[in-house]
Image (cartoon, rainbow, N blue to C red):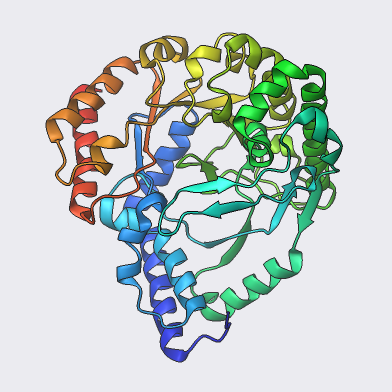
Length: 412
């Protein structure tokens, strides 16, 4: 891929950087940021609302692109992602006053690089597994590998700064500390193999989880010793369509930070079919050991956390956000979280926005009324995720956010 940016493309990118900065400096954005600080402290006056863009961005971003080179179009797309929610949908997306550049640092568990085949023109994919029987293949589990491509990060930063660094700063970020053990496991073995291993060779399964946990903690210590951590107290990505705004974690520089100064994120969607007792025995001890290394924790994705709330998730002492997915018992979880300093992070069903061409406003209003009624007395956050098409109707998506706000205004 060519790194040459033409004069024409350079002007386009600089204009977009100016536009982002203008939005970032607006009074509306300043109010949004202050609302996020109060919300994450469980002191907000209203629920925060976000429509996650990335799953349907191909219907929104490409038609706006004017750059010619592939590299310039990638940067142009990234700039749009920094403010399009604010511009199009008027949700609570906070426009950053910098261009975030993700540091190229990660852990490859067991040194098994994820391999998959992708369905053409679709999000569908299949993982190519290394482990087919844990007992037979256990010796394949190698030492996890830490990848720190600092040269690439430095090169990318300089490249971006040369284009628009005089307009908006380029800031290296790591976002939250992201650890999803069971997802990493099913990347190297099938879910069926994982489930069977818990029954057929439980000792080896525990050994695998112990090894994964030890390697993860070694990776955390590496990030600390190499001064690679970055504060997660502003608009860093917390995962699941949320952000890290907080005054409860240190705003230190990288030379002083520990992982206990940062937000962390974990989930375990892959274990929804095992019993709560099996989760408590085979999974939770390792999740708890890893999560204890975070300052604050956001937990959960699509799994129904109510099944393991009392025995497991409620025991994570630094828990601040918990995902309430469409498969969750919202009344039970609201009862558990009401009055507590843990955010009820609701994920509405994506079907209302993503299936029909015309939005069924009445049906969606009823869906939101259920959430708002159930979550009374909780700190409520609403993130719409997993919408893979809006049928090329941006107005429908904007109206969707408006309805959420209207129902909050009427019922909260």
